[in-house]
Amino acid sequence: MSSLKSLQPQEVFSFFETLSGIPRGSGNEKEVADWVVNFARDRGLEASQDGMHCVLVKKPGQHGLEDAPPLILHGHLDMVCEKDDGVTHDFVSDPIELLVQGDFVTANGTSLGADNGIGVSYILALLDSQDLPHPPLEAVLTAMEEKGKVGAAQFDTSRLSGKRMIDFNWITDKEILAGCSGDVTFTVDLPAEWESVPGTHTEARLLKVRGLAGGHCEFDIHLERANAVLVLARILNGLLSQHDVRISDPHGGAQNNAIPADAQAVLLLRPEDVGDVEKAVAELERTLADEYRLADPDVRLRLEPAERPERAFSAEAGARFARLTALIPNGVLSWSLAVPGIVESSNNLGTVRTTSDGARLMSTITAAVTSRKHEIFDRVRSLAALAGGGVVVEQYGLDAPEFPYHPGSRILGTAQAAFRDVMGSEPDVHVSQCSLELGMFSRKIPGLDIISIGTELHDLHSPKETVNHTSVAKVWPLVQAVVSRLS
Image (cartoon, rainbow, N blue to C red; front, top):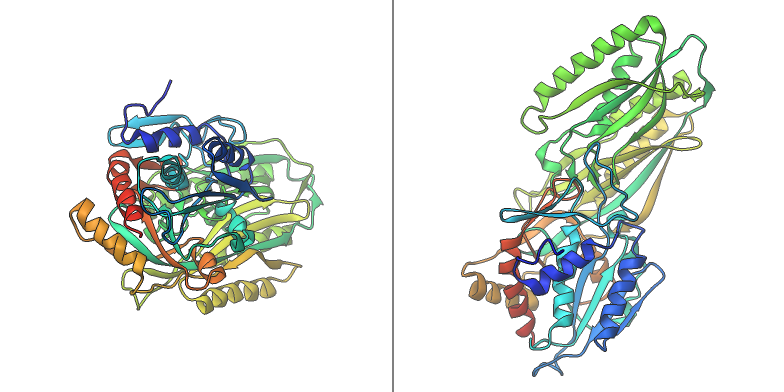
């Protein structure tokens, strides 16, 4: 039974519901890519996918715009996979369970995938339309956007002839996005110097950081929410300074571009230290509750009995891991002077994972100025050099460029006029601290004229993610008005 059948416009929400039934976490896009290709071919459209499962669909112009210059449409197929603590959901095989709550669509205990499922649904609706005037369309649906824009990095833009693009990966219906930042992701590998757990450390406890809001590493980074991986490092540093504690199996965060909402590690303790450790954790929980009473009021620290592992980080390696993790720059690092109120640069320490050699941190720097991004990266390299112990810092994926603002953009002028006519107000032409794939396309296609049109979304990259369905009802007529005016 359809969960969204009562919502309008059905030509958009029917596609969103279909997409929500297809698992499409980053790296798991083949099924949804196959579906889109089959959808297009069933309608007689040219469609293909590449080895990364990025999809290209071409549709001729119609109703008087057959000979107009082509228009590129862009969105990404993948979604961030987050779930609430205690929720059982397999993102590889289970569909998203949709709920309608007043004006909002959300998911039952998981991230929703409106980023970028709603944007892709607009594109599918345009490809499906029979009566809407539009120029020739070249729809590019990329894969692995949420994992460092991997799909867009290798997409063959020589297959495109358009010199103007509408992106649909934006998060508000009050703005037209006309510029954005770039980013780079890096890893930090810390050797564990694995040792057998000392015979004196007979007690094992699982230290858990839970209850944090998490969120998007760009849209929410200025909200001063707690970072679960950094909270974990803070606890470990405090405990290691007072007690002979060994650590094992650190784990936290969902992916590099989501503020981590949870983290954990196994602690190996001497029996005589257990009481003091429990008191220290409880005291820090009270401290954090006060510090984050406005930004992240539900922070919880828990110590639970755990199975005693056979090995742990050496004492020196454990201390190095906790100290270096705590020192990695995180959050807002500079504010723009060119566009007041906009973050110029930030870093999000997104994940920690146990590896065969020790632990790996993954983090994403976002910046509107390329040199600022590289300066922050150099700081992390310097920290690693000071830490010693074989710590290795490496770039992960590509160094994505920023998308610069061009006030004279012709497609921006068309969209502004359509916005005034459809919405009855003046749009905010926005330049954002976020990093989208637009800079990559603008570098690959010289002279490409780009805007992004969005829908009201909240709490992206978290189980609280929502989309306002009344916003979709407003934005869909705007989309139609813009494309029909691109003669």
